[in-house]
Amino acid sequence: MPTGLILMKWDERLGVSILAQHPEAIEVTSKTLMQIYSTHEYSGESGLISLNVGAMNLVSYYTGPEIGVYLILALTMDEDPEVFEDGLSDATRLIVQNLDNEAYKPLIPSIFQRLSVFPKLTEELKTAMLFTDSARRMVIKRLQEEGSILKSEISVWLKDQYREGFADVEGLIQSLIKDSIVKTRSVKGSPSEILYLVNDIFITRIPPSDLIRGASSRGLPQELAEDYRENVMSFFREYRNTDEDNLKLLNTLLDPPTYETLKLLRQAIVTRDDLEKLQKKGVDDVDAVLKNLWDAQMILVLQDAAGNEYFALQSNVKIEKIFPEYALDLIREQYSLKSISLQAALEYLDTLKDEYMARFGKKRATA
Image (cartoon, rainbow, N blue to C red; front, top):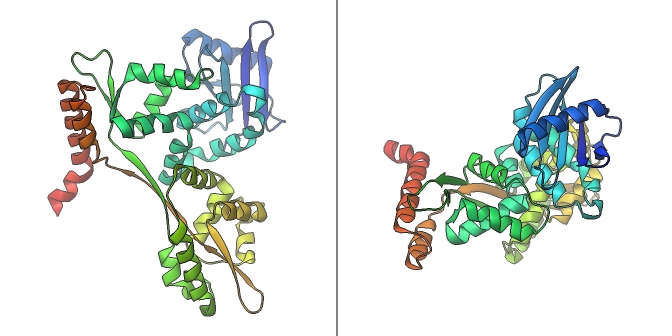
């Protein structure tokens, strides 16, 4: 597990300047920080470097000269620095977006916590982290509307959207490729490569159906089973799927102690004593976790005649990547508006076909 995090900036007058570190006790010498700066400076590009200095295994992500921020993670000697690249890229973008008035400082402990668990993230959490990143979400939203975008246009558009403080467009695009959201293709007559949307992200709340059906066998007294069902049904009568609500859900999931508690609540209806047992899994503040879940409208509390409280899932969350069937209509629309050339449209159809066959072809062949 990583042992510390340092946020560094290069100042032409003062040299290396530490903006934040966590925990405070972490020590990296000025000589080592200069070595990190020099290694990045040699390449002259944004991105990742790693180096071993004595007993230290360090990995650093650089935004590029426009912003000049370095996010350095101290690892144990047996950890692979490259495993943390996407996590550091996401964290750096979040920090850059909050540089004004040092708004990034309160975020550093939670960023370190997320990075610490990054190599072990479930597919669900990786997708949540992808969508909560504002820059990647903006690109996905635009692709949902247009289907394809020139790679060169993305760079200009994002920098215009952010005005100041956005860097490493190439890293963002590469992360979308690695996450199988887009594919890039070179098309004859096109001024640059084209990004094609090949997977979309679907997010929604869903009722905890298994818990409702088997409430009495999952820890809830039989006399409270009907109350549980009615509470859940009442919530979903009013529920509307919105981007604002989805982001609230995803940010709730990305808090490690809260997610650990959610994993238990997906399996059973529990008491306070059950929740306290999660301390051995890193849930040190049960009250804070319960508040997170309550504020996100994910749990409810049921009480029996003796006053005993039972914590139950009110709404679960479903996150998955889906094949964008609607892209066929987008291709037709964009071509009719002459927003996409015939060659680019045909290339997109071929790319979607390849993606579809890779995902569903074998299933159909064995059906």
